[in-house]
Length: 423
Image (cartoon, rainbow, N blue to C red):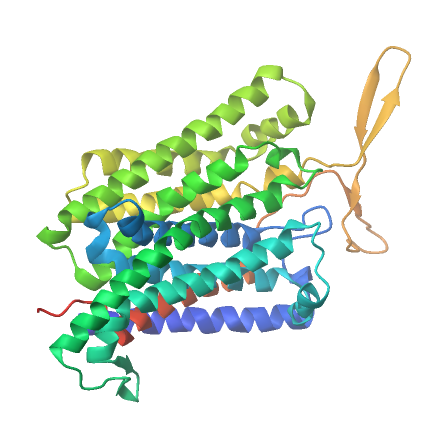
């Protein structure tokens, strides 16, 4: 087990370093290294941001449900759930940085925020969520930190002090009381971060793919599908697959499956309404999904459905639980990525054109923002469609962020007293 842990942390460290080097290179050369352009200003980074926001929200929903809804089955993995919420929200905030060409200018959002935009509100909610999830994790761990301390690499065990059994029990009781008080705040905040994230997209008037009030509920459903899946994998890394956790894992799997079904229902309900009218911008953007991006759509649906079937029928098998968890994560990540291309490839600039027989709408091309071709062989600098495929720089940076989240979790489970001592 120790060899596997060291191997995993080394590989993750290499991926983090590669991602950091790629980001430094991007900062030097600019966002031209990505495959995003003027007609396509959001891509893989924003899809990753939305994905991590969902997994973060799901983690805290699981741990706070113990005190809000009395879901005692989640109690054995509460610490892990809240820890995954914290590291995932950090991952969400990190995913935003490479999408900003000049991240050192972020302080402008603090000194002169545009409150008519949803972005400052989303940043505020994410920061609050990071604070609450960090405090919530500390509250759950406080009794064990008092007795066992925190193990830091090269420094040994710190924050450990001699405490009596009576003092430990007193700290434990206070911890329970504080967790009960914080849970009613943490749960709605977990829902809010995904709601505000959805509003960032849904309030963009020029993007018909994001129209409608269903975007926020689908974001919440996706979070409740991926959050338990992440907690299942994270818990198995810490505790393994034990018989006493079977009921917990089974309940998490069912929770994820039900949420995934609700997500698919709302998703295709939106599709049906768009298809029913067979006209308008909402219908035109739906056609893009099936004409230009059928493979991505197939991946999201197949993997999400596969996770539902696995969780519904094989929730008592360790290997199948892992397979179902990975399946829903892959499906929802594809779902998050598909938020972007159809939205940007329906050009929002329209000019009505009237002929002698009919009225038409001409979609005005957008300047790419890059000189292409040569003097003797020039290429068009205006386009009405941009075939976005993430560049190697984007992929390297994104995998670096994902690796950082995984590495932070792996290091945390060694430093923090997550496993209960026998009392």
